[in-house]
Image (cartoon, rainbow over all chains, first blue to last red; front, top):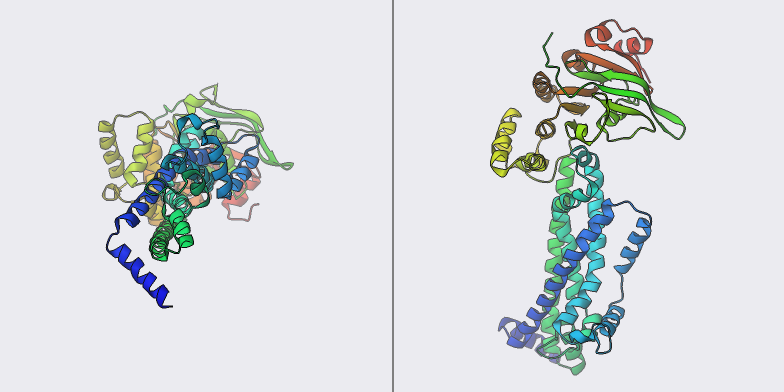
Amino acid sequence: MQGFASEFATATTLILTGDPELWSIVLLSMRVSVFAVLISAVIGMPIGAALAVARFPGRRATIVLMNALMGLPPVVVGLLVYLMLSRSGPLGVLELLYTPTAMIIAQVVLVTPIIAALTRQVVELLAEEYAEQLRSLGVSRLASVPVLLWDARLALVTALLAGFGRAIAEVGAVIIVGGNINHVTRVMTTTIALETSRGNLALALALGAILIGIAVAVNALVSALSLRAEQEGLRHA
Amino acid sequence: MRDFPTENGGALQVENIQIARNGTALLDVPSLRLDGPGPTLLLGPNGAGKSLLLRCLHGLITPDRGRVLQGGELLNQAHRARQAMVFQRPVLLRRSVAANLDFVLKRKGFPRATRKHQIAELLAEGGLSDKARQSARSLSGGEAQRLSILRALALSPDTLFLDEPTSALDPTATQTIEKMILRASSRGVRILMVTHDIGQARRLAADVVMMQGGHVVEHGAARRVLNAPESAAARRYLAGGLVT
């Protein structure tokens, strides 16, 4: 019991004294996940919005597939990205394996379906409300996409935060493609796994506390934004 | 009797339009020509086909059969670009009051410098100058509908369709909206408006189209139709009888 107490005390000290190793790991995690979410947003939001307004054969099946991709097993994604980036893989020539870029790619694969599916849901609801008015104003389905994305911005920030939550907490894929190399690809989740196995609980606990703090902050933001978006909708109902 | 300009893009006509769902005729109008000056009000009970007819005339719904013409030509994109519609429940963009107007002016291709001036003029016309920066979705029902009409007028339409724009409003807000509609009409905008309100038809209409069960049962000058209707259905409706 005394051992745990001392580990907690050391973890607190690491956080409060701004331990360079700890904060460099936190910053790398944030950098990788923020980049991954931004790239996923650029890819996923137009796809989600287009699926919400377009009508084509196979649309339902595409939506079902996209929803299913939200639950992609991270280790499988890690394996696939590894095979693509490994020396004998089709993208091996880029020499990206075991770099932060490889981790970003893996997270983009995991997060894009989440952002696209949530965007589709949000935009489809708004499109139903706006449909006749936009058609009356002469706005085509395609031209309505940026209008809908902009007007759904509050709810879409929620989708981004949900994607960020998934990315920052992810361990399976990034450990495979990143290799957990010290000062290069070691992020919060992979460090927690490694240090726990080594018995260095203080660093693992400190990173765990920061990770939980980030998760709580993201969820609080999601909740606040959802509430505001709901109030905006209710006010007009 | 008010005087109304008559230049508004030519007569609107429907020829043999029909819309049916699950074997039931929702709209069946063999012939209708709307070319008189002053507001035309479409009057009738729920399910009479008034809103459906309005949407066909605006090109929002394509009838199963028949055609809609304006100025003798099939209704096309050029005609539609000179039409605007106000819905029963105003659909406002999740932006500020001014940005809602800016959206349509920008789409019409007006440069930024003139848009600012146009927005100020429109807001003044609708009595919303002090709410320019406010979120459009925080407006009251009457204010929201006024903004919706201003946004439609920002398109400089030759025809303005209104689908029961005052059905959810109190008498004061209704009066304000009616004044806006009459002002637009006096500037030459053809007004086609759906209402259940016989009093409103008496206040606004120059022309009345009475509908029931998807059919036009009577069409003519407002004074004649509202005071001496020829059809039994119109007489029952105007007498306040239950018409279904």
